[in-house]
Image 1 (spheres, one colour):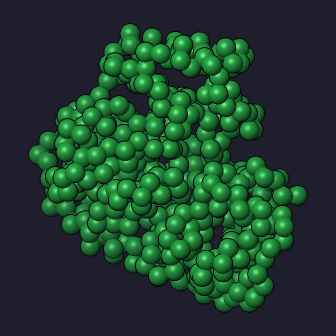
Image 2 (cartoon, one colour; image 1 turned 60 degrees about the vertical axis):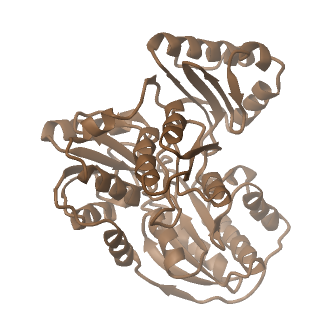
Length: 461
């Protein structure tokens, strides 16, 4: 039975064998192919990550697409950025990636691009409606297989000059599909690469493939510090999220990475627009403005961010989750491998060690993402209670409140955020302040208002 819960805000995702089966993915393939027909798209690129369920689901997806008369270019097991690259390079503008991204092993899903645009929101819901109403095109498409990985490596290495100063880099791929390409890429760029968990294994036996969570970076930190490496890079399950650790073992969160990237781009493109999500540091917008750029805060989600980039003409965008999008010199899609190469390019030009470079970026005290488990669907309802209630003016009267994605309250000395995750059944919170006292005050303010809605909420602060 088709469950509406798998049709998320910016992709399709669910537990394999229950809400996501080969039969269901076949029907989704028919819906995607029919939608492609309506949009005048004749060919779609299809790839998959390293999850154990990937081959079977990819076959079902391709069969569904072919049944609508659309042609398929099968590029096999690749990181998600390579799928996006293939859709651009091969001129289709359309593609589907079978991936569970950073979710646990039992999950899988689909990221969909048609006509150069990533599907999200109503377009994702429209696929569900099409299946429910049985509105499919019939035909017989053709399938061919093509290896695009070498072209991707060549394209990155043409853009990023080979380093004269060699770094020692530890790479932790978390047994995700980035392990099939990342070590080779950074060796091509001239660096000494030390591999950690780069064997693709859909069981993710060493740690969860999500570099946005500090516990998943512990092994990388230890390796970088103990081996005296210059820095460490971590990638998520499908290679579109980046984690960075400096030579002292400090985690360089994506909003601070964005400060470095934006300074670099603004040095060549004054007044450029930089887009970032609501979870990013308040210092990021200030730093972009100080360097002559235009900061734009927007909703979390790779589909939302790409659409906002297109709307604003932004040259750079990023999310606190580790998605980094370059339009300058690249294609505008989220690509952790390319973002890491751009980071290396910047670090190579400096005479200081990475920890000294990152120390020049403004910062304060902050929390990582705090995730609070909730029943499926409860997070959205909780946020509707919070944002729709009459309590906001009284509780946050001394803050600038933003509700474009959850609730963010900005104060002169810090900010707090609570939102419902679009990918997992969680509330997501984050806090930042100038000092520990301000951080505690802001956290307590949020704690009090959240517990008024649900006194049993398991807040870890």
